[in-house]
Amino acid sequence: MTTSGMPASGTATIDEVLEARGIGGAQVFIAILCGFAVLFDGISTQVIGYVAPQIARSLHLGHEQLAHAFGAGLFGLLIGGLSCSFLADFAGRRTMLLISTLIFGIFTIATAYAGSLQELIAWRFVAGLGLGGAMPTAIALTAEVSPHRTRATMVMMMFCGFPLGGAVAGVLAVAVLPAFGWQGVFLTSGVLALALLPILYVLLPESPVFLVNRRADPAKIAQVVGRIAPDAAHLTIVPPHGDEARGAPIAALFREGRAAGTVLL
Image (tube, rainbow, N blue to C red):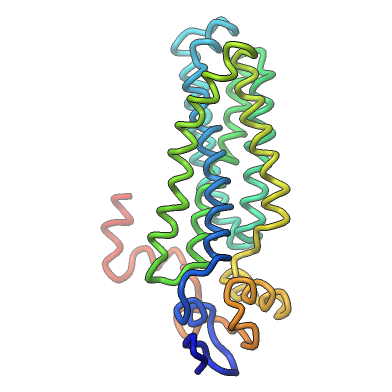
């Protein structure tokens, strides 16, 4: 064993690597990047609430009609959350976070050009798909670079970006609305999200758990693991042993006392 608790040579699972060391700067940096993604997610999700009266006056909508646009965004968020969580197991957490950010960035901008209730509903629904997908993939990526003992804390700190985004949306509305109207608020929100995209593309690594479970190129796994845990660069990272390697099938939601909670949820 090395002084860090890492095996001196041979193989190890990613969990063994993470558990053998504390939280490092790379893991904190990944959590911060994910935090910025969910911050802009929070802005784009909440901003419509701050400009709803202006939208209603501009498009001549009643409260009931405007409620359809709110509902479309939330329904898209629901579908996006469910589908992107599933797709992230095939495409990767990083990839789905990038795609989700791209979608909600583009269609938040598109919302600024809505000229009718139908367009407003359509753009908010599609934006909601991205908004719903960003959150679970950011949570998964943050969790999968953290050791078990600090995983909840890391995810909680990263998740703070979302309510902070809701607060920033209010500040943004106050700053932009008087000069540029509700369209300017959506444009600014979408542009900020798209501006984050190249930063995520360049700096955010893929989840090492995903790479190992998908039997990715060992050199690629070593690159990501070496960034998170430089003292593990000499190890060959292997999939989890036994039952852990099988992932999380749907049937597992009803085993080991989880059936009641699953049904209730």
